[in-house]
Picture 1 (cartoon, rainbow, N blue to C red):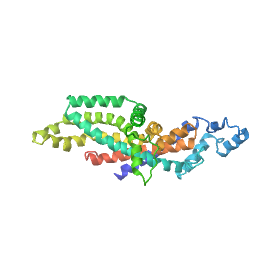
Picture 2: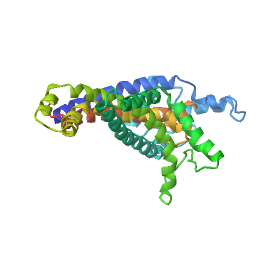
Picture 3: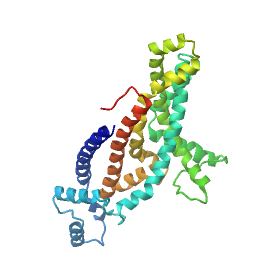
Picture 4: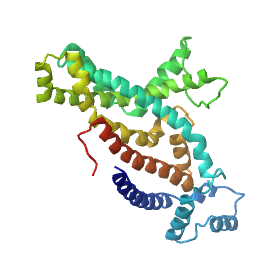
Length: 319
């Protein structure tokens, strides 16, 4: 086990190195960081040239990359060109909000997806299965911005206009003295994420369970006289959940990046909104810092997912 983890860790370091090169080149050539000063009459050309020199933008790209990488290894992601703050501090402020939002959405999604997937599989081709399938396809086919704006319009804007109890639109900051308000701000963005994720997960669970229910060992368990509930939850669900472990393990870090739309629409102060705000300003230290965190999370959780496999299914041995 430990030798496997060590090998995967080395592969992960190499993968991360390649990712940093690609991300650096993409962000560095995506726009001029000083373009924001193009129409600023108080910034002369001499001032721009001095600032460009001070930020190291006149160095060759490979020199800029190695300088950034050397500092990043030490935990220094540089300073934001626009905010004039350390990028690591900006990420530390935003990351907890995104993690809370993503994990809450993921936990609710898994619970709903397992419930709906199991019911749909057990009642295959029944009216219940058809209703779940229809709503799953509707949820899965809706873009995240459409469902998010729809929830915002109905439960925040229209409910308020009708004089009904309505929900806030986000933009919450954790306040120990008022946790209820923070939770109320989470409802709409979490609902938008859950709506999209549950639709896909539930169809996946349904298909996996139907495949497992047709295998010989399930028929053998039924022939021994075990109840349908015991066969389903003790024998079928465990094997059917194996592919779901992979999807969930990889989805969590991707959700850090996929939250850009949700956090922007609901003004949620997380990593996705941070990325979007500073990408528009070509503030590449911030963009690179966010991408590095997401890439590291993807690689690490991929290894964790493989290790978790061995606990979920003892038949799998890591060489």
